[in-house]
Every structure is written in C-alpha cells, then in structure tokens.
Length: 238
Image (tube, rainbow, N blue to C red; front, side, top):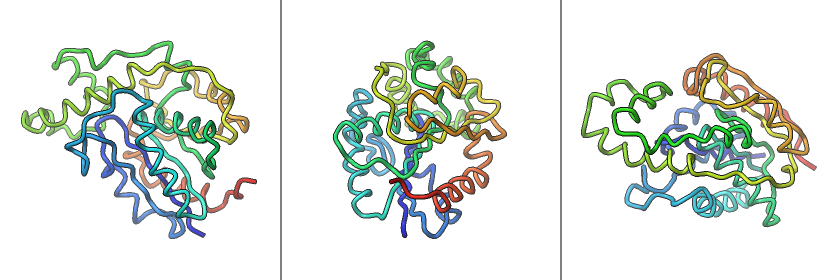
C-alpha cells in the first residue's frame, strides 16, 4: 500500500524544503511536496491574494494525489500548517475524503494565533529582516547578499501578508485526529498547544522536539521517523 504525503511549505519556502525527506521516508510513503505560486517552478506566477485563494489553488493537487494513492496524509509547517488546516475544512465542506493523517507543525491553535495576529509584512526592510533572523531557518549568508535578498523579499512579504491578514472563523470540528508538532523553544507559537484539541473530533496528539521554530530541519531525522511510524503503523480510518 502506498501513502502519499503532501507537504506544504512555510513562508518563503518552496517545494525544495522537503526534498531531503525523500530518502528517509518509509518505502511505502511517497513524498508530494506542494509548490506554491510565485516561487520555485512557479516563480512567474502572481502571489496569492489571501489564504482562500491559496487553498483553491492547492485543492486540485490534493484531490489528484488522493485519487492516485491508496491513502494520503497532509503535513504543513508554520504558514503551511495554516494552509493545511484550511484545506482540511474545504475537503470536509465539499465532501472529499479526509487524509489518513494530518500533521500541523509550528503554529498555535487558530483562535490563539488570531488574538495576536502579527503585521510583520508591514515592517520596514531592516526590521523585517531582523524578524526573519529571529525566527531562524534561513542561511546567515543570505543576509549578506543583496541580490538574493531582493529576490526573496517579495516572496517573504507576500507570505507574511497572507498569514498576517488571515481571519479565523469558528466551524464544526474536523472529523479526524490532528498531530501537532512544535519545537520546545519556539517562541513564535501563540497559546497552549493543547488548545488544538477543540478543532478535531478525535482531539490532537502533541509531539514536541528539541529546537526552535525550524526544529523540522534541526531534528529532521526524528521528525521523519515519527511520520514514518504514524503512517505505517496506524490503522487506516474507517
């Protein structure tokens, strides 16, 4: 049986951020890294106006993957976690199959994040770059290459705008169990992670890793090992 793992990138990320997982995933798990508009192989396309537009763009990939696999799972980190959460609601609302597993990483429960919505994308360049440095996840040499920065800054600002302007609306709990991942030292996550319990009928399972916001790179082998274990040992949904 093949399980397809659709991975949604964080702000500024492309499909490439998950490529290193390919050789670490269980042979029965197929990596499907999503490419968002405006970066990577889709560099020439306009950025999304909002989260809803991003979800509509990603939905065909999810449905095509679901049809071509025995089952599928979703993984999203930070902005990707937000996109994954909204995709799950769209799938439910439109009557499409839910994934075998949903991994939401590096982001607090929607109502907690909404209380402290950040307008990072509005900051002047110097302050915006300082915020990026604080979060980590970007090579330090990037900050010394103006040409590279000039290429990445529009992508990053567009993504931070997407997240910063997102407005959460309460809906019925999702018909599944969520797996919530976080770095133990991630100060960017707002509110207690246990608050995710109310967003799924099956509640949530919390998985904490050493590291900050980008623990998924710092503890890559541990994260992938956990995903392998959950996808290959967990019973299929009824």
